[in-house]
Length: 99
Image 1 (cartoon, rainbow, N blue to C red):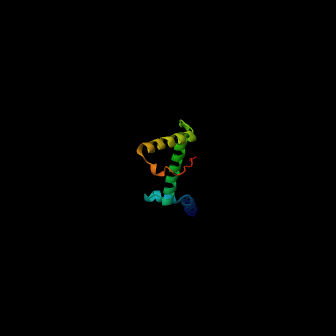
Image 2: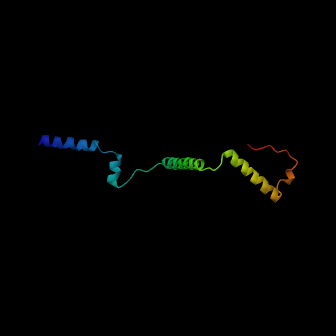
Image 3: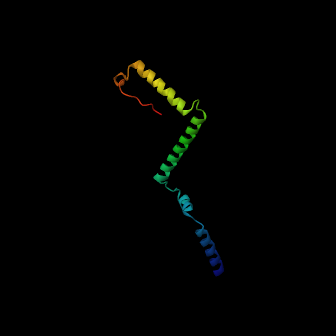
């Protein structure tokens, strides 16, 4: 009888040693609370991944080089400004090209 009690006690001890925090929380119907930092860092990571994917897709499908696009955009802005009469007050000032 003492051997049976000892055997059962050792079996119960082994079972208790294998229990971790998640098992106890699951038995109580609870779950571990996530940290706000964990949530924030996960969100920032997903945002950064989206930025990288978007930049890669933009570069892959870009019809012109960056220099060519900036030059064309600058010309369009100058033409639109001339049409609207914007910049006449700055006509006497020197202009440096934007590169």
